Image (cartoon, rainbow, N blue to C red; front, side, top):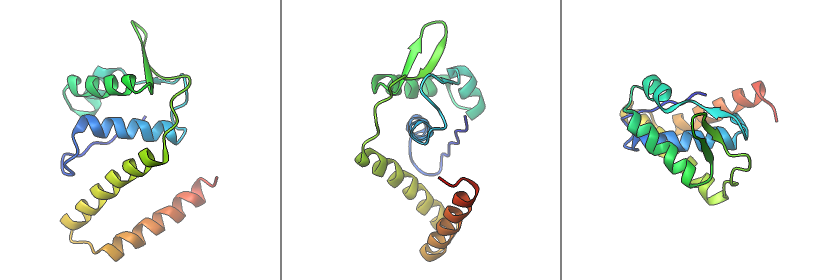
Length: 130
């Protein structure tokens, strides 16, 4: 499970964790029944306070996306709720915002960002055709 956080895009860390776990589940990289990393393990890996990860997991549990099995861990729900088109757009908009902020910090023009996204899209689809 690969989660990356950044403090430069202005999105709270627990929300970044939530969004990335939702993305991993929606993309099929985490399947129903898969165990997600324990709070302490993920907190250590991301170098954040365990309470931050616990908050993200609690929000995901409240949304029915994960289930907690006491003494056993946290798992992707067997029937995770489908992600609505609106929710998908919201998630992608947050990632686009972060990309555009980063591009601005690096003084990269919008047309260069768009060209890079197109290039990455082609590369990914060549490696992982669907």
